[in-house]
Amino acid sequence: MSDLEIITFGCRLNAYESEVIREHASAAGLTDAVIVNTCAVTSEAVRQARQAIRRARRSRADAKIVVTGCAAQIDPQQFADMDEVDLVIGNQEKLEAQTFQGLDIGDSQRVAVNDIMSVTETAGHLIEGFGNRARAYVQIQNGCDHRCTFCIIPFGRGPSRSVPVGEVVAQVRRLVENGYAEIVFTGVDITAYGRDLPGAMTLGKLVRSVLKLVPDLPRLRLSSIDSVEVDPDLVTAIAEEERLMPHLHLSLQAGDDLTLKRMKRRHARADSVSFCEAMRRARPDMVFGADIIAGFPTETNEMFGGSLSLIDDCGLTFLHVFPFSPREGTPAARMPQVHGTVIAARARALREKGASALQAHLAGAKGRTIRVLMENDRQGRSADFTPVRFEPPVTEAAADDRALVDAGVLVDALVSGHDGAALLAEAQR
Image 1: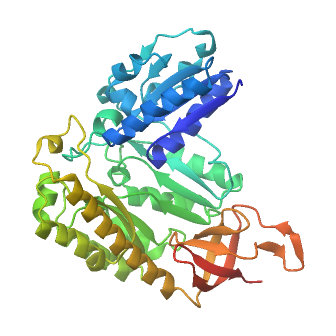
Image 2: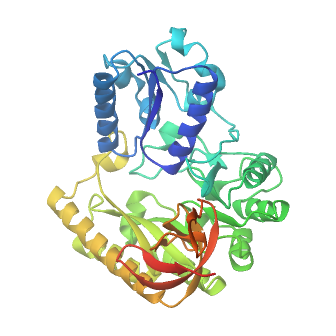
Image 3: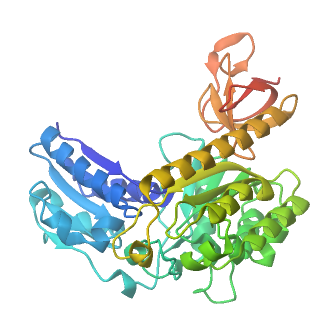
């Protein structure tokens, strides 16, 4: 076997960067190699990466194994000490074409990891999506200047830095010309966009610029945002720009003020509720997702109750629940810990509450006509990112079942019901 294999852990930004890595490695002629792009958000993520490295060596005895990503950036030595690993490269190095030159002949140092805190700029990298034509991701920002007590990621990503507006516009325009119907802006802290750029640039101004300068872009979507950082231009864009999708995934983390303070978050519970109310007034069809941590250190039953009731108070639909896991090197790891069985029970309660909210959302869509971005001939996503399933598969012509609709096509559909996880719909002619 002499293929280039990339194993990715973690966030959408890591997935995006894996495609950058693939292009650089392929251009450099690197073939018989396995590149592991790690995540450091939890100790479990690091354990899984190490396990994948050992598994890769067993299946690819002669391949060159390269380790990169946040875990490698934060603690390169733990991977350099593994007999299975040939090379460790940092988060900045993995995005540079020259890093991959000569790797196939061993022409490189074993550990190439710089001081990520010294990096002050980031560049856009043009990639062609993630395997189909449905949507493409565009990195607009990297790094984070905040220091939440549970998070190690700033030490893996470095300071916040933004891709210049012109580069973002050029990349979006190129992707639209290549047939992509939806662009997703991604980064570590995208609502911090523009603070390091001249001209008082903000995420909202970037959104409005892209929609104005790329009029053929059907859909623009945002990845996770920090609601307390949302700027007035973004609020205006949400209210006025139909091509900006009515779905926001919020980094809320908790629904109790003391817990939020101990997390070193920058918002209070009331800020989250008022933000969601304001966004629904601006955009009545808005749907929210959110990250919530279960069992943060010192969390009492009463504190947890604030997080549980936040689902109703904010009207959350798509919930990402994270059972707290202490990450070595963070202040939260040194705080009094909640017992593991309690954490598991609270995470289960959050997921059950989230599942009920999703059921209500799905049931409320019956009878509506929606526009769906097809991911293949049987499924896609609505504007608010709800999964939609079609049975039978969608075709270009009702009488020709062979003319199946490709990924990236926008289809009008009538919702007939749901299966508990997705809307069921029939394509409209």
